[in-house]
Image (cartoon, rainbow, N blue to C red):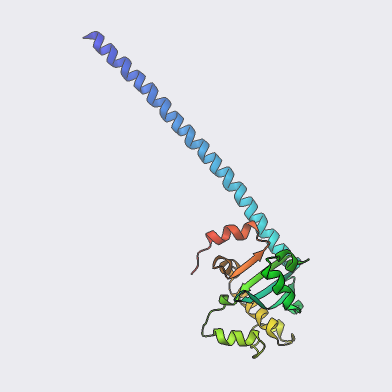
Length: 206
């Protein structure tokens, strides 16, 4: 009887030791997993924040080019320097940009500009403020758009100005406008940075 008790105690002790080691290993694994997660999150956050700062600085210090397309045809476009509306200039020779666009030669369209944004006309759906037919008439130069932005009052009315007013007005209303339109495939950004790729999957549409 004593032998059975001794054996039972030994078994209990061994099981306790094994269970302790198992729990210890599980805790170790969880700690290592948590550390790896923290490191990866830190690196991820660093590159995201850095890219956001670079983008903000790049847009505020350089010139960007915006093109409007309808049914895969470039309709109009403009350049804007340092996000200053008064520097906006209408693009000429749209046929050249159409040729580059069809061949997907975005680097040639970009040229020495900081970023290229190609906006689909579907980014401006029918609403109380704009209906699609009105927008098309504006972009074709058949009708002028009312000034939405004070700084643009002295810029000659033309399709490029109307496009610029819509873009800038939407950006001022919603800082995430470009990202949201990119997520909806209404906007092509070139070159697309890490920030845009990440935020497309994290930003929720209303």
